[in-house]
Length: 145
Image (cartoon, rainbow, N blue to C red; front, side, top):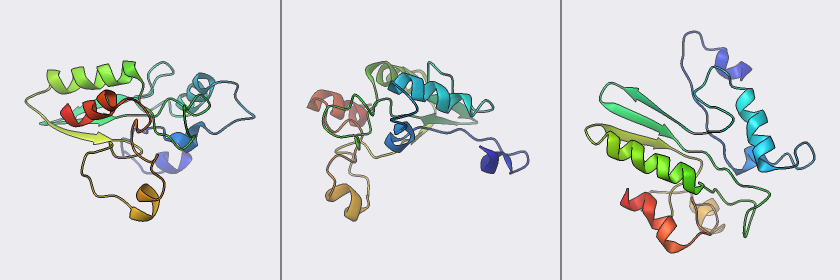
C-alpha cells in the first residue's frame, strides 16, 4: 500500500490472487485473510465482504475480479477461483453496462479465452487459469459473458 500511495493523486484498485491468500499461520480461513487484505487498502474500492470492484471511466467500465479460495481449493492452492457470487455480480455488471467497453483485471486469464499467456507458467502448470478446476459450464461463463 505504501508503494501505491507514494504516487501523488493517482487512483488505484487492487485484486487478490492465490498468493495473496497464503497466510496459512496468520489466518484460519480464506475469509479472515481477505478481510485483512482489504483492510490494508482503505482508499481502494474493496470491502471485506466484496474483494472485487467496478469503476466507470467515461465510456469504459473497469472490473477487478479477485480469487476467493486458497485453503479450500479443490485441487491446488495455485488455483485462481472466482466464487459464484462474484461471477453473478460480474455478469450483471457487464449486462448493465452493455454500452461501455469493458476491461477486466484478474490474476490469471479465463480458461479457454484464447488470451496469450506465459507458456513456461500456464502450460506447465495447468491450474493457472480462472476457475480451471470447476465444472466446464462455470469455466465457460467467463468467455460467454
